[in-house]
Image (cartoon, rainbow, N blue to C red; front, side, top):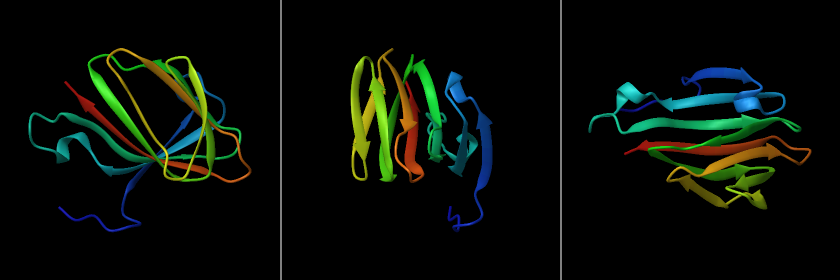
Length: 117
């Protein structure tokens, strides 16, 4: 399956998981696009304008991978707080929690992949 840039479904969520501002999800592929029992729940770019974020939430029965492609952010990965920037990656799962927010003057963009088990 090939999807061309500019053809992705967009969804904007206010106060995502209790976080500040709005986050836009640019959905590369939907759950139903995958075979294999549809173990991939999310395959999207997260677009966080300055000051916006995703609140603290747990990942039970799934793992989420973040790959930072633009901007700067602050992540809380199960109590470990760190600044993240382009090229950094975060893996959260096994019941652990995370949150992220854009801390720079530039939009934070993250590729997010959620895999269930």
